Length: 262
Image (cartoon, rainbow, N blue to C red; front, side, top):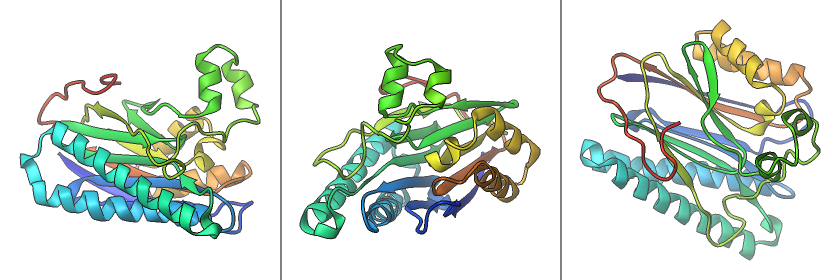
């Protein structure tokens, strides 16, 4: 199976600087997205530290390990890499007053023969477009999601909530962080979208799906998504990584840590 990658970021209509960051290494099937938070330029620093660290360290490990690494090996490498990046950001935030309190969300995906190893922290998201249907394959680490899960809010109330940006998990804000990981089967024709909340807060799933279906070119789809988010107000930075799988699937992915296939 071959993979096509494309990434894009945009400052949006309301911000002066861009605290979103993306990185890719197509040779090893790696895509990374981060949405920073913090005063001054601290959010920008955190997100760029994270994407650069993961692309360099995890990308190098994937090149060196090659196809001999098992899915469990890759999972351990992802855990270790994110833990090391978390400590680097946390230490920077605690040694430089300008960076105090900085942190970042994370979406990191590694495409392999077994499928997509999908990790995330915070409320940046990953979606899968398959057979004309869009499915969110990450679950937000946010106060709003916890309220939805507890039945305290309806989906309609959540859409109007003022608590959309309160995350319950982020990289760099504590000395340890838990990366949520899943393995997903990848089928030919799948399109995967990793995005910051500057996109998902502006466009609902139906709108994202329609724009992806209307623009089969990944570069055109990315521009259409950015334009759509900005047309709806562009209240935050917008970032995305798009990946299309082409060819014939080699194997059926098996469910694993911690909650199985979605």
